[in-house]
Image 1: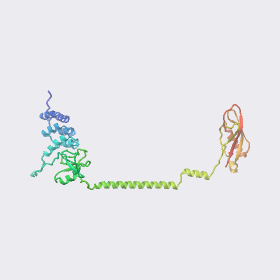
Image 2: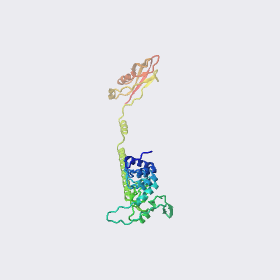
Image 3: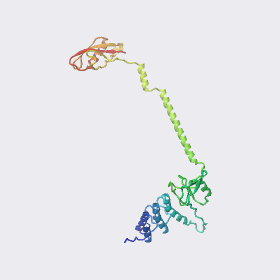
Image 4: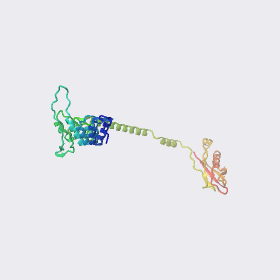
Length: 344
């Protein structure tokens, strides 16, 4: 036999909240009969009614409403049980809670008589909307929700004291003071009706578009200005490579042909260093070709070098370059000539 929970105890309240979330109406009845506090809340300020509405447990909602559960309590998110059931699409639980909300009398100040007010009309049948000469059946059938297509008719026919809200996303019209979120887009509802079809757009939209066009125009102008400056700079000052080539053409330097090898050593050369042009020969304007007779050892090194012609200053430079030349190795010594051109 299970232990009977103590009335108003923390254990009984926790069990009531858990039973409501689990959708167990028999357990909820037993806990209420045992004296559990029906409006107890958890750390999120959620009552048993909010928990049942959040999970769509219609029978538990019915039991709690019959026991007198508070319907206007809000959790830490700021939503009531009715708002949670509407936002999560539990139409049966929402209808039960909405009927109870409509039955709650409005509080009035002392010594003040409240005029008899009829409850707002709740539409339960699908609405027929006239669009472009044709009649189409609305997709909305939830009580208290009017399609956006009938916004103009709703605005014209709504009483002055009736609270009208609309969803800024899907433009759905809602009636009643207890609705705060759209049941289709979960967007917060905005007070007031929707503008009639064909009404001018909001001024802020046009202002945003104008600002966007201004930014695009400024960016385009800046891009054209930068491109013009870059092209102007490039046209005004030629690249450094062009200047360097022009300087080379204006101030020619020494041009030497590759050394010419003849005799037994022809086609066996490995390295033929260029001779140094003596400064004394440059100052005297000496130029021409100098042939050097060389003897190459079996190891490919020049062991003898003797100039055969040309100015004396150029002969020494040619002999020095010939001694640095190397050739392929052979079994015997061989000889030949190396001709150097000194040209200004």
